[in-house]
Each structure stands twice: as C-alpha cells, then as structure tokens.
Length: 104
Image (cartoon, rainbow, N blue to C red; front, side, top):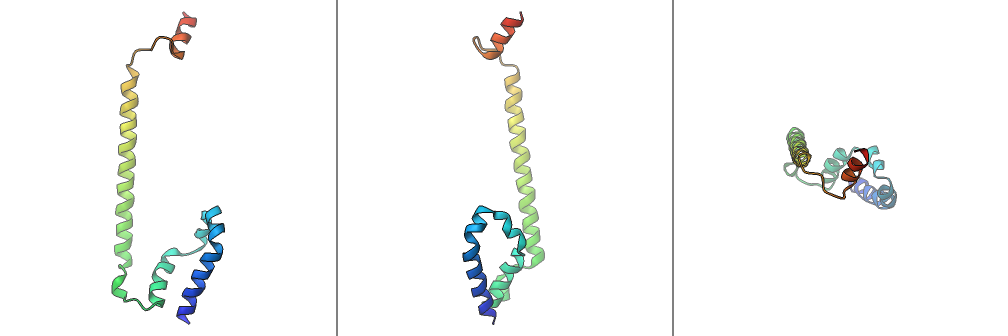
C-alpha cells in the first residue's frame, strides 16, 4: 500500500508537470515537507537519513538570514555607487547639460 502511494505521487506529478511549469503556485496546495519526509518513509529508508525537523528549520532560518544579509550588502553597494556618481560633472551634450542650457 505504501509503495502504491509513492507511485501514485510520481504519476500525479508527471501528469501535473506541464501545469506546474505554467503555474508554479499550484505547488502551494501540497505540504512539500510532508511529501519529502513521507516518500522516504514509504520506501523504507532509515529514519537516521532524515534530519530532525527542528534542525531542518534552523538550517532554513540560517539560510534566510544569510540571504537577507547578502541583499543588504548588495543594496549598500548600489547606494555607494549611486552616491559616487552624484558629484560627477555633467557631460557636455548630455540630456542634463542640454536641459540646463535651455533653462539658462
């Protein structure tokens, strides 16, 4: 019975794959963590091969924090680049120099 569930899941994913590709939010209907833990169980894998749920959640949280830190660093770099261009002289023939010439 358990192996039948795994085969059914695989068949279902195969059938739904084109729709999932067109609309990835379909996956929101599934508890992917339950599937990721249930399939190995049904296939007879050792429980030792799966991480403890708390450990998994800690890894995810650390990954999220790292991604946020990287985003902040990228934003700071972009801000520094933009700030460096603020003091740059207006280039002759640029749109800004033409607009300034027309106003003057």
